[in-house]
Amino acid sequence: MASTQMSSERAARIPAATADFKVEVVAVPVSDVDRAKRFYEGLGWRVDGDFAAGDEWRAVQLTPPGSPCSVIIGKGLTKAAPGNSSGAFLVVDDLDAARAELVAHGVDVSEPFHFENDLLQFTGTKGRVPGRDPKGRSYFSFVSFSDPDGNDWVVQEVTTRFPGRGFSSDAATLTELLREAEEHHGAYEATAPKHHWSGWYAPYIVARERGKSPEEAAREAALHSERTSGHALK
Image (cartoon, rainbow, N blue to C red; front, side, top):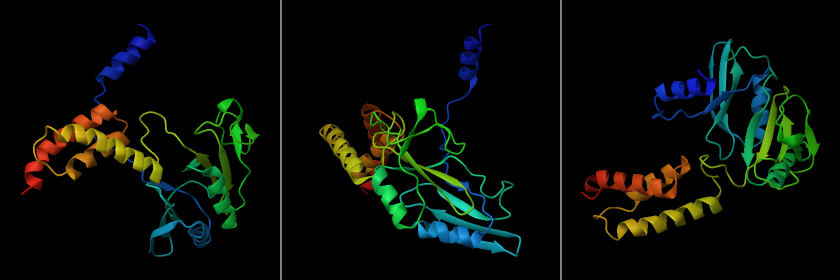
């Protein structure tokens, strides 16, 4: 039996994922918790919590501005050696502005670069080519910096996302998404039962952010609205 056929049959036996599995916290190994906390807090990252249990365990959770994912630093959390984190991405929609902000915070940030032949590599500066992506593509221009322990961060510019990867959280993108929702809601509202607009907009936007097409999102929004509108209007 051909390997491609076996792969297809195996995939057919795997049930489709229905639950959300969100990456929300990533551990970053550090040697000095207070020093690392000052560094990340100095970047403007929000301190969500600082917890300790005796002298052997401590956890500090911080969240970068606009990020749905947080990082956790501390003591007794991970077997990874301090400074062993490499290849973590911070995504921005304006690389130059992000770099300028990091410099203003006193961070030693690299100059913009792209990767030779588009091959991402996280071993030092291997494969890096000075300058932005010459084709100006989304996803292919970077800068990088390290925390005091040497944990590496790659800052990636994303202006247009790949299909199915949702949307950026900037105001212009959200405005366009709301306008799109308004247009599709108008077509639905013309013949739909009485309902509150929010009960249609919310599932539409969630579906679009999960990679559904406008048509698929409109169908999901209609079903959700019809299931809940009676309760919402009471």
